[in-house]
Each structure stands twice: as structure tokens, then as C-alpha cells.
Length: 142
Image (cartoon, rainbow, N blue to C red; front, side):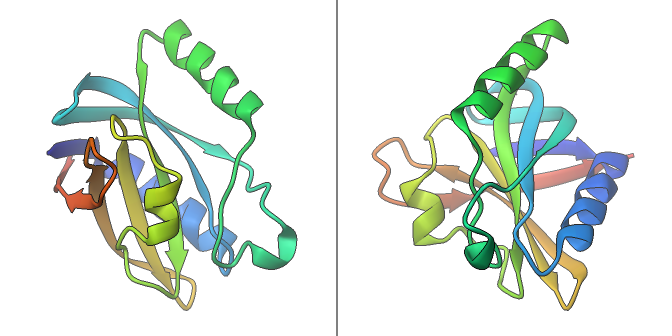
């Protein structure tokens, strides 16, 4: 699985993650492509609605956010291709919680933010049988 995004989009993600530290921050990836090869064209941050005292290690959004973003993607001629979020003071590795709340057809970009600084970013795809995530190749273009 391959995901491509521009360096400017990557920097936007890093800035969002760093600004939200020490809490998890996330949003949707809008783009185009197939199950195994996506190109991210836009990112849209979504407010973390998880319980405030748990936001340092959990992220959630509302079903209304999902529906609104699907409409926005359609209006732009794009598709919701995935989701991005931070792991504050933790590796950019998909967790069991991430697996339990993921969709097999989505691309997941996870950014490790350590002491307020984005230090690593990886892309993941959930297997169709939901048994685990597989790491993909993240390409950052100019």
C-alpha cells in the first residue's frame, strides 16, 4: 500500500499535531486513488470529542463530522481516502484501539509527537479481516 502527500500537507499535519499537543489531534484525508494507492489532496482537521481527560491518548469525532466531510469531499471532486491522527509521546504505530475503530478501506497516517514536536510519520492500512494493520509506504512529494 502506498500513500502520497505533498510536503506542504505534511507540514500542515505536523503543525496541527504540535499545536494540539499533549492531546491527540486528527482529521480526514481527502484525495483520490484505489485501495492500495492513494494520493492525499487535502486534509481537514476535526475536533476531538473524546472525554477531555482522556484526549492525551484517545481521539474521536461525531457521525455528523463524517457525513459533513463526505459531502465536502464530493463537492471538491474528491473522496474520503483516510484519516490522520497523532500519538503524543508514543510511536507512530497503529494501536489496538486504532485497529478496533478502523475501516479496512481507509488509509491511516499516524504522527508521533514527542515533547510537542512531530518526529515521525507512518501510513497504515487495516487488513480486510480486521486482524491487524500493515505498514505502507508514505511518499512525500514537493
